[in-house]
Image (cartoon, rainbow, N blue to C red):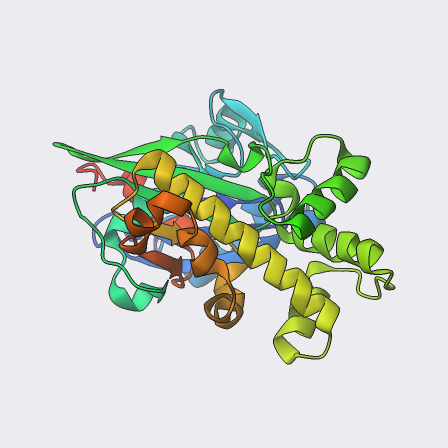
Length: 329
């Protein structure tokens, strides 16, 4: 097909510390096409990934060689035109990427702000609810998600629609609840000094919990990756791994409950990220919901707030697409 008659498209990306996902948005139908995932560790720069993706577009045919606009959801603050991904060596430079794509408009948005943008459009099949509760549509929504790090974001309703409030809530202090969690905090403090909740609620956090419990219980830490620990827990093959995931979900429930109280998030709490959707069966059986509600005199306040695990693929890309829609969302 002659490129002059090819279809225009927008580029959207969700760039984390482990994976970068890139997709193509049809700006007329707002449909997402040709989503590709790239391992960050295999590429020195995001620009190298762009080269691979643009080659894919050329091979597909039917699309113009370069996009009209782009929106990149990035796992870091977006308060400058050149940002470093928090858990990655990649630097995302808006001007360089724009130049590589033909001097087009390039927007940067925090990755969890992008997830937040996608939340109002989610359908019942896109999430699984943990426990009871129903959303109050006129109240704030909280979003958090363990992955390579811990993302935290919120949505506040307004007359013009929801306003996204992004931040770095994954780096607040870890507040243990039980004596066992206090012991874990002491172990992690010896290694890290200050312990943020991301030190527990992330992929590396699962490994941190596993190793801390091994020391406390006098056990050998046989497993050496979050994936191995999660697989062993899912298979019921390792009590230590299962105990570690139990702590992970207990802490996640407490943090989600704290966030709901802080924000008045009666619109619901949504858990996204790369970990919990893969372990949703364990989440349902865990103490997460009990710890979410276990806030003393404010238990009844939290009992009515739904906690939903986002199961749809690529919510960050969906949010980046929303960012490019002229009419907003």
